[in-house]
Length: 80
Image 1: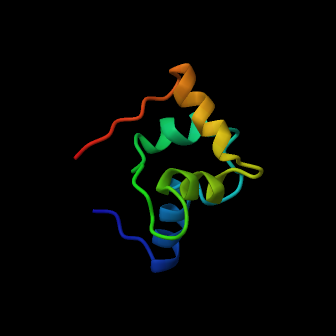
Image 2: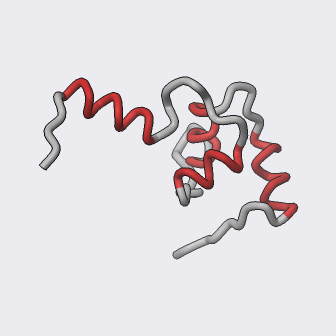
């Protein structure tokens, strides 16, 4: 069993979600690390994928994500 302080547990959680420095180098790195991102719309704000990328990549633009999907580098799955 591994025991962590609350501070260390928080630090690990933040790092695992790519929210700590250094920032990821690009979208593909974020999506490869996180394995998947919910693409549904968040009421009144933006799509979840855009919110996730804005919080992790300086200078992120939604068109960057669209370009990766259009090129086939990322796949958008729409579940119901």
